[in-house]
Image (tube, rainbow, N blue to C red):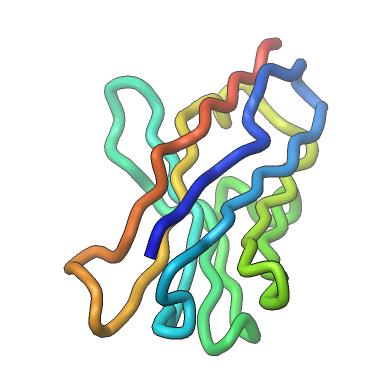
Length: 118
């Protein structure tokens, strides 16, 4: 499974961005997907996750009500709609896909930078 993120950039506080994660390869083996982020000097954290064929979602408390995760199975693409962005959302955002047959911790994309200025 290969994952490629896109859609990052620089926005002012209160703005919006939509991240995309295009999956290729053995996508039929993917059981769950999610978005993580890592800010400088901090550990990588889960932002939002999709499981159960996309029917179940979960969000970090810090993004609930502002971020929305979704998946287009026909396009093998996952999205993260980010609204009301705050400076503390600044981080590198990574796409993750978990497969029971894959590596521990799942597959990772290369990351995309999101910078929110006040």
